[in-house]
Amino acid sequence: MNLAIIHDGLATKGGAGGAERVLGVVHRMFPQAPIYTTVYHPGLMPAEMQGWDIRTSFVQRLPFGKEKYQWYLPLLPMAIEQLDLREFDVVVSMSHSVAKGVITRPDAYHMCYCYSPLRYAWDMYHEYLEIEDLPGWQRLLVPGLMHYLRNWDAAAASRVDRFVAISEYVRRRIEKYYRRPADVIYPPVDILKSSAPPADYYLVVSRLVAYKRLDLVIEAFNQLGWPLVVIGDGVERTRLQGMAKGNVTFLGRQPDAVVHEHLAACRGFVFPGIEDFGIAPVEAQGAGKPVIALNQGGAAETVVHGETGILFAKQTIADLVQALRDADATLFDPDRIRAHAERFSTERFEREFLAALHRRSAG
Image 1 (spheres, rainbow, N blue to C red):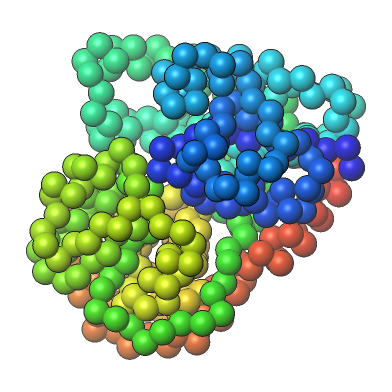
Image 2 (cartoon, helix red, strand yellow):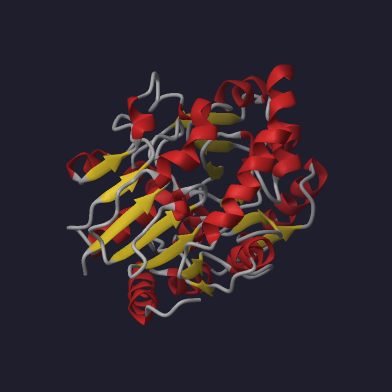
């Protein structure tokens, strides 16, 4: 196929996350395909990306474009529309923001692998306003900007020939906000082939950003006094470290090998946020470890309550503390947990992704 891949900005301060891991798998499937994006920061992304054909928008060339691309949020719709894709017969956009808004030839086929409708403009608009520490003058501008982005986002969705969602949770939101049907293909997850006897600590692996609600985890473990290891970095790290007592250890960003070692040895994995899918909890289950997660979003589809982990109902410290106590008192079967995780394997993703791409009929 004469194919191009479109991805939202590759410059997140917390480093590569689930979306970038999926991009890595799709790039291996189509190694000759160029990757178009709004901005790219090599220092924050995996070293392997430096050998890829990555083509950026004009935002990359603006002052501090790749470091402070959030400053240019009003320009991102224009930036994605300026990308010239006339040479491509097939376009795959991988979008949680503006990537799906690219303009293609009338006869080109555009499949969007949708991580989420624009979260901060749609269903999580009020939550973002509550948890983000914005200066007063910025808060005054936010409603008008979000109104503009919602209108643009709905229009951009009409440019897609077929939507594929990463979960049922996302599929329902695509239907709600874009009035479009979507298939569901769960993202690829590396299933660890070995595990270790449980150590004493629980584990978090995450970007340290406000909406992931890691403050709940810190407060819960402050109460319990149990050991907690946090792997990841982001704008919330200083605040979270300031909250934490001595039983909480922050390791910052770590290579995959270190993450896998901690997944293999941890007592359980804690996941308090509302995520569209959540690769890390499935990786933990692949290592045979139970997951303590909020019963919303993707975790509600990937964690089986009482069998592969414990689901709690509300984002409160009390609910999380009780869920941790329930998990600690439950005898989980690591082999059963690991077998459940196999349904999210990379091989399954590649097979289903290619099948969806070759169907080529409009959704």
